[in-house]
Image (cartoon, rainbow, N blue to C red; front, top):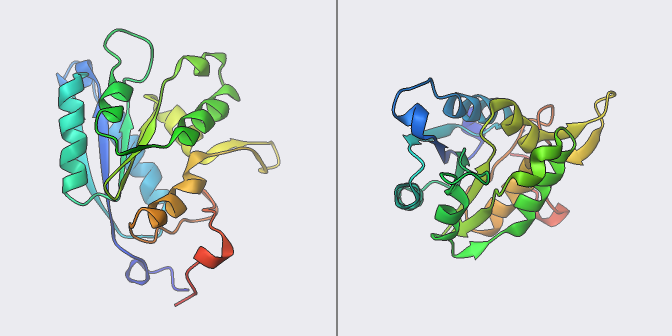
Length: 200
């Protein structure tokens, strides 16, 4: 199969950084560049990004997620606002717009992060489906974003704990989205054999 972008389905992806301080200009947002860099590196598909930088306000987060779903984003990734602090309301805002909850993503994100830091048990990330869009809350730190998506690897490069993105393309298939293909050097997407598209 050709690796030219034209050989792959175009995909629209919403990326949302949720931070009071970054959205007010107190410091430079790192979440959006980290998400865009990782997705550009990982996906073979031509990507249109819809980027949003917003404060930790539950109604604003929910409204932004709905807006991105209505724009036709197949995938929406958020970063920030998933801890136990009073202003951390991203999971609540995400669940409020859900048609289906996908608890396995949150469980696996914490398993990946626990391979790196014991405070991973404090994270409350969730994933949901709204219409034909998969919405996933990711951690706030760029390093943790990549670790969560890619997983934890042993010194020889073998996978120790699977990253969550391995399951994202097939989930998007199942909810009616585009056929997402990945560079296996970054993350190997897993599909059952009957769901793999023949080479074109």
